Each structure stands twice: as structure tokens, then as C-alpha cells.
Image (cartoon, rainbow, N blue to C red):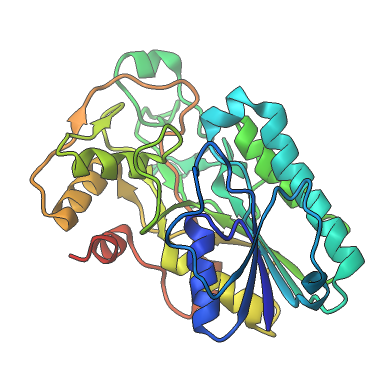
Length: 341
């Protein structure tokens, strides 16, 4: 079976390439090798795969495209900060690149039987909901500036004043992206409207971690920055009180879910959250990662807040659990695997 993987030189995409080849599949990759990330092709690229280093917006497809049977589309320019600096470029690359890919597939891929789009939790934006434990009152994710200024960082019930509990977000929550990057990922999803060549599934990824993730550049995720700080024997610096909840997903679970969709004959939901479904507080994640690395370093709580930040992010992993046939790994389990503890 011949698989096209866009973004196949990236952190997650390269692991997907390896997994496909290990299963006896043929992997064809298109990747722009974005100059802001790569000076040259990374050393971990699998020599058994076939690579085309080109931007999807300008890629001239090779004859092998006609033989492709499944596509995993991961190619995208990432980073909230970068999207703020380069909105036209990021939207063009992510939405325009996706639209052109779908156009090329429609013209040149008569054998295509499965398409998987790797999207992001960033499309949910402010769509998280909360509930007051004592009353069941449903609340949005907004926080009052006066609370934040006073060091009260949770979402509070206006009726009782109690701390509200986040509700794991489900796939049917309406997208409400808060920034350009999230909007560009939602635009990718919208490109699939009317795509009828084959069944398509959208995987919305929470923040992914694993080997090959970026630690030291300006677009690294918070978890990547924490790993970088710890590797340099520095205390991770956390805003607010460090008790923000995040939901990280192990790269191996992302890859396994994608391979199952690419190679399986079963029907799949149109959208699947790819997350652990296990809430992890930021300060606890620092300690778990430090333990996995074998270093005795505690996080530094610098306080303050960043306007627009979500207090908590947590996904409903029911559909992913069904696809995998098991629960996804918790962050504690994944951190041990990542650092070999």
C-alpha cells in the first residue's frame, strides 16, 4: 500500500513515516523543510522513504501520485507567535496548501481510498465550558480581568463564587479559534467541505510530545520549553500559579491512530480528538518530567498572566480510545517512555 505523508520530515510526520515503513507500507513524503526550522534535512529521516522537498503551494506532483492509496496531511506552518507575525504566509501555506493538495488528489489519485487531516485543538479556542460543582451551572471559559489582576486565576461561578470545573471538550463543540494559527487550522478543515473522492477523517491533536520535538526555538510548545529548561539545569518558569490543566498526547498514540485510519477498512467518525483525556497540572508536569530526566529541579512560579490564555484545556478521548482499542497514555506514562525512565 502506498501512502502519501505531507509534512513527513517533521516531528510527528517522521514518526508516522517510520511506522508505515515498519508495517511494510510504501511511504512517499512531501515537506517544504521550512527554512525557519531546518538548515538541512534532519538526520532522522528514514532512507527507505521517498522524499520530495517542496512547498505544497508550488509542488509539481510526480507520476507516483497516481498510485497513492491513502494520504496523511500534516504539512502546516506552526506557531501562534509566527502566525501573528506572518498571517498571510501562514494562512496561505495552511489553507491554500491544503486546497491545492485536495485539487491535485482529485485530478491525479484514482486509487485514493482514505484521507486523514491532522488538525489541532487550537480550533476550539474559547469553546471550552465549565460547570459549578454545587449547582451544575454551565459557564464559559472567560475570566475577569479583576480576578486575574488579584491573582485569582480560576474560572469562578458568578452565582456562588466557587471554582468551576472544566468539562472535557468533545468533537461536536463549535470551533472558536482565538488566533491566526487556530483559524488557519480550521480553514484546513473547511477545505474538506465537498471533498468526495474518498472518506476523510480530521484528527484534532492536543499538544503532542515525544522524541524529535523542538525544545529550544521560539516556537517550541510549553512542554518543549520545559524540557529545554530542565535539560539546561534551569527551573521552568510558569505563569499564574502553575496549576493550569493541560492535556498532552504521546506521539506514539498519534501515529498509531493515524496508521489505523490509513490502513483500516472500518468507517470512522469525521472528527476525532487525539488527546489523553487525563488532566495534568503544569507544575506537576514539570516534576514528572524532571523525575523522568533524573534531575532535582522544581518549577519557578513567576506569577502574572497572559491576556487571552485559557486557564485549562482538556479533551474527551472517547473516540480515540475506541479507535486504539485502549486508553491513550497519560502524561506520566508518556514522559517515562520519552526519557527512558
